Length: 256
Image (tube, rainbow, N blue to C red; front, side, top):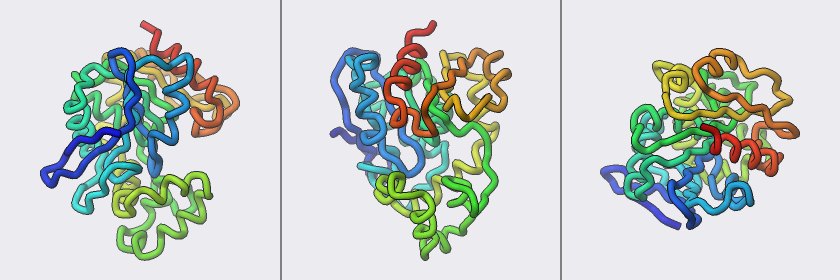
C-alpha cells in the first residue's frame, strides 16, 4: 500500500499498487466503493496484467483518509487525485474508472491533462441526477439534508442498497459519502458529458448490454468516444463479467 498527502492538513489518499511496465494504469472506484475490492481481479487478469497498476481509493473512501472539512466536489476529488498521481509519478496514465470514478476521471483529464493519456469509463455518470428518495445511489442520498443523512438517513440507505454494496459503502466516511453523492448528482458546469465530448485523448465508454442504447451515444461516437456494450452484466461490469470486462478494456487500451 502507498499513500500521498493531498490536502493542507496532510490528509492522505492511499492505493494498492501492482508492479509492472509503464505507462501506469490507474483504477478508480464508484460511490461508496473501494478500488482494491472492485478492480484487483481485473488488474491481474491475463489480458490486463503486466502493467504498473494503481488501485486508488478517493478521499473519504476505502483505505484513504476521511477529512470532515473537505468539500468532496468532483473537482475537489480530481484535484486531490492529481496531487496523489503527481507524487506517484504516473504522468500520462491510462485511467479505468467506474461510475462516480468515471466522472472524477473526466474532470481529472480536463483539469490535469498531463496526467491522463486515455480513458476507459465503466458505466460512468455523465449527467446530473435529480434527488429522489425512491432511487438508489447518489440520487437517493442527495434527497436528504446532510444533517438528516448523518442523523439516521444513512441507515435507510444501508437497508436499501443491500449487503454487497454496503460492505464497501460502510467503509466510507458518512460526511464524505453524503457530500460525494450530492456533488455527483449535481454534476459539473459544463456537464461531465460535455467535458468528455471535448477531450481529445482516446476515450471508451463501457456499459451493460442489457441496459440498451446509451443515451446520447451517437453524439459521443461522433466526438470519437467508443461506446462498447458488455454482455451478461449489470452496473458492476468488472465483477459481474470479469472476462467480458477484461476483453472490452484490453480492446479499448489497444485501440488507436
